[in-house]
Length: 127
Image (cartoon, rainbow, N blue to C red; front, top):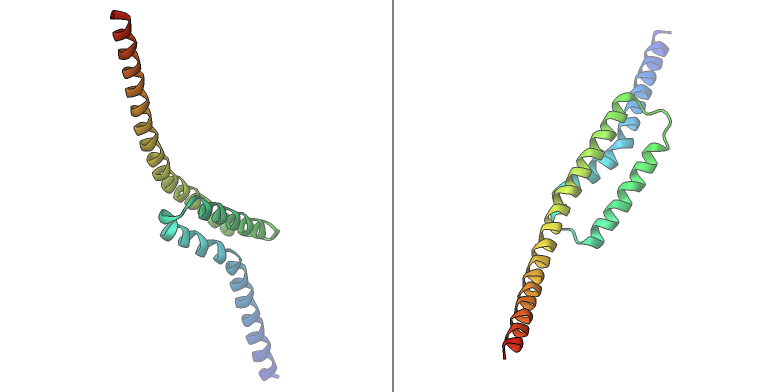
């Protein structure tokens, strides 16, 4: 009889541990993805960012399909969403600054052309 009690307790313990592991693994894919983005995202092209955003949305949809998420799991998901958003902002900020620099150079050229055009008009009027 004692043997059966020990086996039953062992089985319950194993099932309990398995249930805890499966719940945490529901978030692990998202956690791993965010870590990957934080590591490699600085070198992403626009197309790679679009694919990353699509995958992030799919992972969130999968997590949101679970109706039994614990409060800790919800907090962890929110934290990962914040980390992902910060990574996008940080890396997009670089791209925006690069575009502004290019636009600034183009604007400088445009303004130089306007100045030359105005100078040419004044010279023609003076003649």
